[in-house]
Image (tube, rainbow, N blue to C red):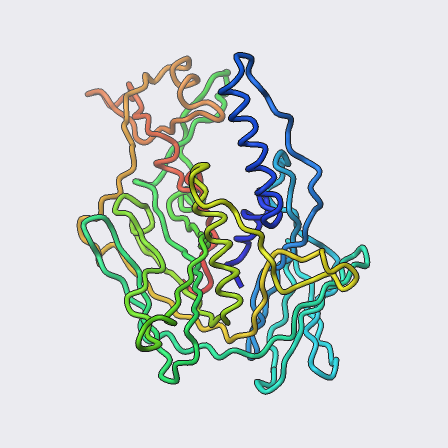
Length: 403
């Protein structure tokens, strides 16, 4: 139900509220020890918490359903994500008819389409590779109203991206959004030259292959939302969402340096799911000091059928997933503030100088030659490699399919 893989981030430092309260207690003890003693106190790493199952996703009654399974980590674990492989994930109807999701990679279990009856209730069943079975509460199918408008507005600080939605029947009241961003980036110039080992040792500057230059010039980047974005109209006079900002692009970002696209997804929640996510949002985003509200225990709707105290982290709902996409190009935002720091300097065209600046793994790339009156090359202009190779700016040459 939360955005793709966002609960992995939460799971690394949170095993429900119990872990956080233990950390808080240890933190208070450490603080009092430091204040009251001259000798510093260095607590041991906090490990040994049971590895809780994390369940993430939403059951789409009429479209693609993706469920992600992972495990919480100890605080000093070196890995970022601990997927749960080889599980059996099923959607069960009231008469126990089961539809099985196919295992993909990285803890993803998916099915291209479901066809659920809105008058029935369903459960999510998970059987891990260790034989432990988890079952969700019986879930009613919740209707998701359409996204009426998906748009952006520019301000002096950047670009805000907004959604409008409404339910004329006043039945939704609780909403959630997540998004995926893709954008194109380019180098400041084509990388026509490169430093290679010379025939007599050292480094020589040679013309670069045009195909390689093209790969270095245009790249694509992507990013998924990581925050919990929810909203309630329960206290409003109408079930209307107006100008809800789902994303913001600061005016120094490279996201609008060429072309940008964002896909937003909208889900309807029930009250219990909204309360669960609200508590999770407080636990993960508002713990700045000991004087802030302290973490609360999260109780989801997916439990170990043999041990009611073993509650998975996550809250599953059944609701259509509605999407909209928009594009923004650099011509739409004249004067956009992004600039690469590409300060250049001359490098002498001799073996030692070229070896220092243009050797293997060097931070600079030869951009163009400087010639004397006789046409001989006396220097090369050294440019930061990341300015001439977009792949060094976390870019990929794989163009998005929808681009």
